[in-house]
Image (cartoon, rainbow, N blue to C red; front, side, top):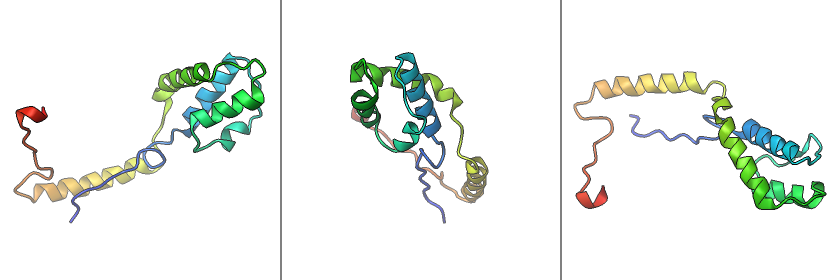
Length: 123
């Protein structure tokens, strides 16, 4: 009997790394900071602060403020979100799980997800 299913979002449902890399690349381009193409792969899974600290120390001759680079990258990332795609194979998997849960839910007399009663202080 399936009671709960949890999905990790990044890497299971979506893969944000290409969008992060594109936002970083656009940020560096906008500020005229040269970079080797491999730099984005070298920082997969690391924080933006780690990436831009490296950029500041090693690549940015004009020493743009770290906060400026981080903010620009975040703004670009948000603008690029519509380009994000689901991880291949996730949607068919999710649909099959959904059918299993819906089939199970139809045989129950109670809702699959109990409705929680909230007191006025919790609203």
